[in-house]
Length: 225
Image (cartoon, rainbow, N blue to C red):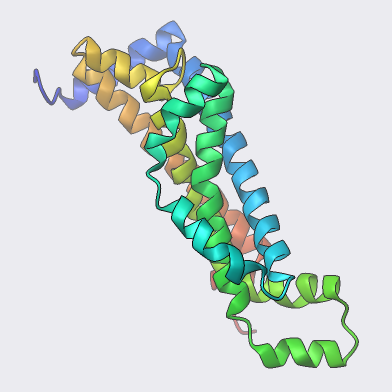
């Protein structure tokens, strides 16, 4: 029990955190940073991918630099972000957005480049403009890759946020876990882990539901009449 606690103690620790209101405060801090970083990472990743693919050589020129930057362990950047931007939301948001950006960017590029070239040529022959190609051909065809990236990257956003909270923070689930670990309060540590897992599962379920509604052909929900 000293090292792994027990389910009853974990439940009791959750109850204590709820009773004091600290759990909701920490959940709010973490979800706010992770959510903002998640949305920023998705937006920049999608925009960057389509902008680079709109040029003939843009992606080929920048790909080595992007891969080199991607190879840097992101945890090594967390202390820099904290020194530059302090202990507020900014470093957490930036680290979360950075982890999301690369996955969305790479999956979008892969999905768009996998679109049948003949389909694009036919659309151009029929008079489709660049924006129409993106809206009616490229996005629907690349939707499976894009949605897969969007669905799984919330967990990455949570990882980035928790990492920043581990290093230096005054609120959040990562802060709660680190503080409990320093006090050797194993039950609260496991309680924080359980809450993080539950939040990621809930968001992932919501994303699957939205994917089935918005892109049924990408989610396998289309059935024959």
